[in-house]
Length: 373
Image 1 (cartoon, rainbow, N blue to C red):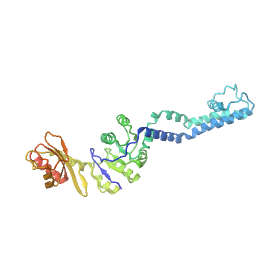
Image 2: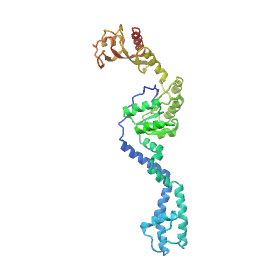
Image 3: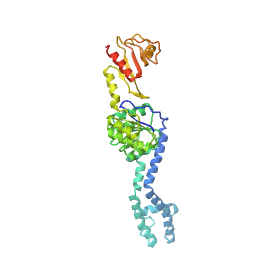
Image 4: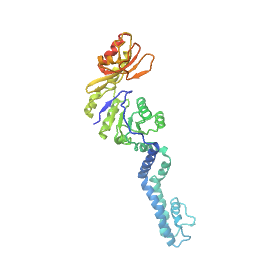
């Protein structure tokens, strides 16, 4: 089972997604699905209208001819004659109601059938089919139903928008957004990117189904409410046992709950991650998220070498061996960055180092560099 990992605002996992499907192909599929949904909803009045105008028109024409009335109704004109009778408009060949009883029945029956058709939504079908703006939610759901291996974002507030920008704008990942009460500004933000928005409660099964949870690669719960996020990820896991789940959790008390109910081995809350970051900034260094690998914590740190720092005048290779660290980037003062620097590169005051090591070692190095300022 995939685990649930709770991450802070700025840090989300990089998820590989297949190449995005061309929008024109997806729109064609969405139109087909949307039209199919319309058909399922309105098929009864439509079928009654078609059968009445075509089959009923044929029968009425035959009865008209059998009654000896003239002129005869041409086959091509019979459906139109039925429509005229439905809307209480006498065909041009009649000056008064025919005196044949079985035709009189048709004259009084067809308006009733027309009322049934209208009452069951045929007019709404035509209007909505050609005006999809009135059915924005249904259209978005139709578009979302065409997505595969996409990322579902629950809560598109300040954090959610940043997640959308990274995933959709920078990484080219297909995204479906869920928001219960979207603002006009959010509507415009998503519309500009052609990202389908599902209105509803993200902890409800129907809402997640509309977002295509069964076919999604990952589910990101990043609302500002821990209870909402917890309810949503529990629902998502119950619906899709293999989906990757990422949650924004602030309160540490939920760690135990998530582990217990979701059978997750590792849960990291925002407070746990932000504490070392804040501590590092207080020391004048930048620390990244702590990674837990085989029970050991690792971090990456960026620092500027101060006067008298123990690494001053030493080579990159010597420091890596002596301190059991990995210097992944070295910026000499006034020069460009050197990724994977040479072991013989000399470290001097004012240089910038990016160091990857065990978390405790990183903090010790940061403290030693701070004391020299």
